[in-house]
Length: 443
Ligand SMILES: Nc1nc2c(c(=O)[nH]1)N(C=O)[C@@H](CNc1ccc(C(=O)N[C@@H](CCC(=O)O)C(=O)O)cc1)CN2
Ligand SMILES: Nc1nc2c(ncn2[C@@H]2O[C@H](COP(=O)(O)OP(=O)(O)OP(=O)(O)O)[C@@H](O)[C@H]2O)c(=O)[nH]1
Ligand SMILES: [Mg+2]
Image (cartoon, rainbow, N blue to C red; front, side, top):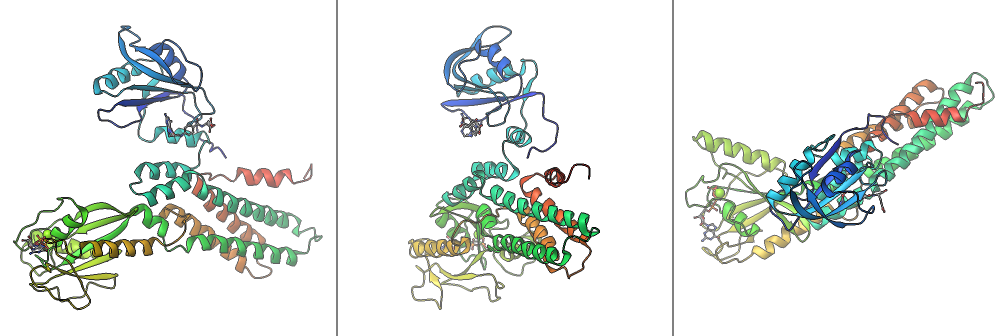
């Protein structure tokens, strides 16, 4: 379980509650000198796992730095698995700076780099890689659906499932290795063994492929549903971006070709993460900068989940098609020329007409794209490793009778390794233990 990497001997500390002025600022300390840091700053260690009010002093000058709630969290039953301490300070910039300076003066203590606490939790076997990713995603979650997905991964949904698959793979490998050993003794029916093995490998392959056949909705939920606003210059793209997002994000003018850079606004539509992208108007142009903008528009359209093709009620639309990406046709500036547009949704940023209907349509498209049910795979890293594992299992399942057992064992070993990569346990030591503990003494 625990990766065999060296465990740190130094003690790290960092503000854990953000960097601005706040009511309370939490400083976390982790490592063998965490207790000594409390001794020096707080005059001792309070009862474990209870917040206690203490005066914090500078260890050298004995000047009082703050009145704070402090916690002593002796390892290994802590988030990192090490001795930990927390200082809940008054959240002023000067208070925090003075306490961090005092901590840096404690022997063995140094500021933590980004992710250092989770890294230690992983090194100490408190969490696997998928749970560490869940922590990162939970902190980054901006919408309800993202929070739910991240919390599920932090809770071990992916890690446990992959660990179960890996156990099965290790069993299959142990069986194949045993068959290798006994093959020359002639007392095992090799054909029966082959058939059972390929059946179980196929079942494991199918289970993994079932989880992979999710339309990438876990990855897309992490990244957000990407909606690109495209159309001719002056179609009203930037105005619509501002209206839909309720922010004054993009410059609007009656000069065609105003927008050159793509502008992204992240929104929460009914709990779903949606990224609205404003683009440069599509037209042939001599202007090198605008031409680069148009190139970028085409690139964003190709990677979009949904394109809003804007056509102003009072002007020309882009004649060309926008590719085979799902597209909603939007008739903008409907206040200027009332009347229906063929198969288009009419909106006006001036009167607000049609904006709610458009938001509903975008939300419905996002909901359909994210699909029903929870996805297990949330990152390309998982998908790549699971795809590799399924590929190796497929070769085992498809191996004809009499196929060299060494090659079958090798594919199983590679499948187990790929599954182990998902949780960050890449070694095969466990498999060796299981294999050899099942052997007779003396063999
Ligand atoms: N003040 C504070 N709030 C926080 C954290 C923190 O470190 N400090 N967390 C930042 O991570 C999160 C909570 N996560 C935690 C995960 C594990 C353990 C822990 O000590 N686990 C031990 C003991 C469990 C128990 O007593 O039930 C264990 O699993 O053995 C603590 C916090 C969110 N809130
Ligand atoms: N009457 C009316 N005018 C609008 C509406 N939406 C945008 N406009 C006007 O149309 C002009 C162009 O709007 P923009 O939002 O800058 O158009 P754009 O598509 O971003 O244009 P480029 O960035 O040049 O490609 C501005 O003068 C807007 O005020 C609308 O719904 N009704
Ligand atoms: Mg614009």
